[in-house]
Amino acid sequence: MSVNQRVGAAGSGKATRTAGSETEKSGLKKIVAASMVGTVVEWYEFFLYATAASLVFGTVFFPNAGSELDGIIAAFLTYAVGFIARPLGGIVFGQIGDKLGRKHTLQVTIIMVGAATFLMGCLPGFDTIGYWAPALLVALRFIQGFAVGGEWGGAVLLVAEHSPNQSRGFWSSWPQAAVPLGNLLATLVLLTMTWILPPEQFLSWGWRVAFWLSAIIVVIGYYIRTHVSEAPIFLEARAQVEAEKAINYGVLEVVRKYPKGILGAMGLRFAENILYYIIVSFTIVYLKTVHEYDTGQLLIALLIAHVVHFIVIPQVGRLSDRIGRKPVYLAGAVLGATWAFFAFPMFDTLNPVLIILAVTVGLCFHALMYAGQPAIMAEMFPTRMRYSGVSLGYQVTSILAGSMAPIIAAALLQQYNTWVPVAIYIMVACAITVVAVVTLKETKGVSLREVDAVDARKHGLEPVSTGN
Image (cartoon, rainbow, N blue to C red; front, side, top):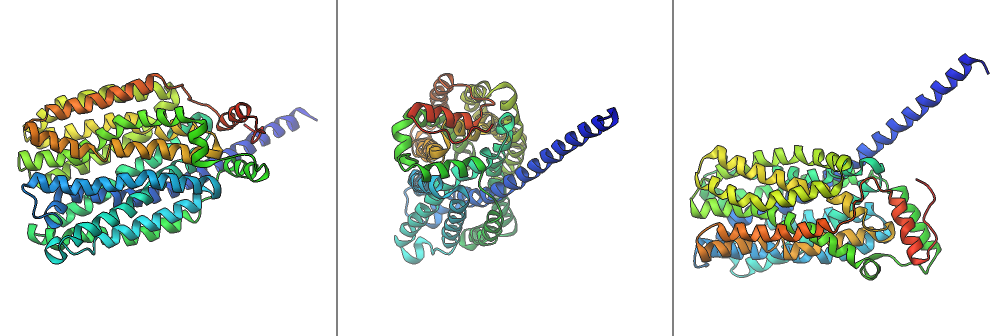
């Protein structure tokens, strides 16, 4: 072969590899987009409830409460029902997702949460049907939470299992970025309603429009999710389970074999979940009840903060690929512990710029923990039980953390009439997460196939694959 022929052959091989790399990246982008659209839909609806609980539900469904804070606390208790349902959804859909696949599970969850949210917008208030109103609200909230419990694990794993080892933190952070995007959309819809309608009409029917709009985005999200494919590593693991009947998978297996992984995931999740719901839910309560701050101004502050949050999350995911999962997460937990001590004095100034800044900085601290979660948790568990493992670690913590955070914070405010106990509460939560991070094994760049291989050696199984 002549020099020119060798050079040409080398150039051709390089071009083929480049074309293949571009094709893989294009396919990954489509999977990320499909995962994000569905997650935007799910969390638009879930967070819509959180905002409505702060602004509307205390009046519409709990008008006989002794005070405004009592009504809000009652609304947050129904909000907590969704969190209680989430671990159950995580268990059920985790089992299904580990057996049948991520794609079909995600199609079911998006329909369930969409139907529940649409029906919430149709519910009569307490003045019309009495105690049936809060009872039906609780039932629909349970269905919504049950579906969301199965959503997160499937959405992030669909991306994480397709991602290259060296950039898994970046790619799998995009479904996390869809959460503030969904929250942004919910806030934008509610803000529009408060702008164009007088307060009495907003309380009467305006808030319902945001819930009814879910039907449109559910159809879009479902359609996009029909066009995603399962990751090869999952298909191989499923084939192995089917071929070797002695191999177990799913919830019971992950509890038996990886209890430390579940506890570690719960510890990572604890402070992040509490900090987030204090920022996006209790902040509204504090400014509205203590200072009677304008609702529209509050929603604008959240709107801006959600935009920044969406931009920051993928960049933090990229940072976790460069310097490691642990240092980035640790920074988020430490900085999160300081947030309330300077944020609430900024709220007390009633300066709109300082309020926006306080909320935005809080969500940036949160992003340092939140962005890396899919990669970290995916790297904790083997493929045959990964959906169940990440769902349990993520969703069970929601009962103790996110569901209770606004309730505990509102109760502390009512009892002590100051924000200081709330700040201490956040600080303690962050200390728990710091301990979890310190004991965590660094997994930056690890191959998910190697995780499966370690699992196979540990439990005497045949390796899933010898590929990279």
